[in-house]
Amino acid sequence: MIFTSLPSLCSAEEYHSIVRSAFESGILSHNGPILKKLEKQICIDLKINNYLAVTSGTIALQLAIEALKIKGTIIIPAFSWIASAGAAKWQNCKIKFCDINPKTLNICPTSLEKNIDSTVEAIMPVHVFGNPCEVEVLDELAKKYNLKIIYDSAHAFGSEVNGNSVLDYGDISCVSTHATKIFNTGEGGGLVSNSRDLNEKIKSLRFFGFDENKNVVSKGINGKMTELHAALGLGNIKYFLKTLKHRKHLNHVYRNHLNISKNITFQQIKEGSNCSYFAIIFDDKNLCTKAIEKLESNKVFPRRYFYPALNRLEILNSKQNCPIAESISERILCLPSHNNVSENDARFISEIILSL
Image 1: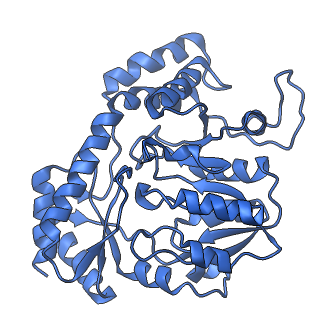
Image 2: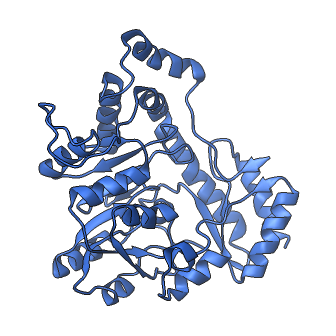
């Protein structure tokens, strides 16, 4: 069976050799030495100044909202994972949805600007499938309307803009290091900011609101990553560049084989994309359904990211229309793309789709 995603892992022996020190010292959490080493290594590998690891990408988004003191409305693209909206809801913020660019699948600046009013305090663009947003344009809009930018960079570990990490943009970027991500710690996430004040706030917030002198100075939560998860990340980070190279290769293989189809299109990606997911967009939803059935009959299990569009989820009770996001969500399919998928697997999967 070929699944859409599987974790990229170091060997069990490598993990044991790293995590053994935690068992010997008895330090399993509370900003331990393995966590500090992981944060430092990520900064080195991604060429960024700061990285603060937490328990999940969702918690990272919540901490970002709290650190920036956002109380009003946040604009979120309708084409995203539920965590984007869920984090805002948990922080008691109101949500306005905007539409996406049908080619890049990222937030549409024009739709975004149309949704800005006096209640809006922040925007939460998503680097969909690791494809960088129009960061310069969004930065100009944020300055024009005095808005904060929290990037949902769940997919964007290793993505770049002009040779620099995409995580360096915005007020805060929030990463997911869940098991299915291109780099993983089993469960986990991280925050990146170039503001010293924000970094200090986030450190306090992720540890119950304590400061360095163990005084409670803010309304914090328990967002600390454990040494056990950090050890897995430290083992996996050694192979990240190899994983990144393989994802980009699979992206190339899929595109080369599927580009003869007149029934599908691809996400338009920038050179700096990490290609962490590979998506195809069918001309109509019925063909998408047929593709799923045909693939599953051959023991290939794709995923419909993101379906339905967030503005169509009943639990979010949105009255807004985002026609592009709604249409794309019904016709998109993510194909298997991970270390266990070989070039021959990608060809096999492509042939199934071409046979429809």
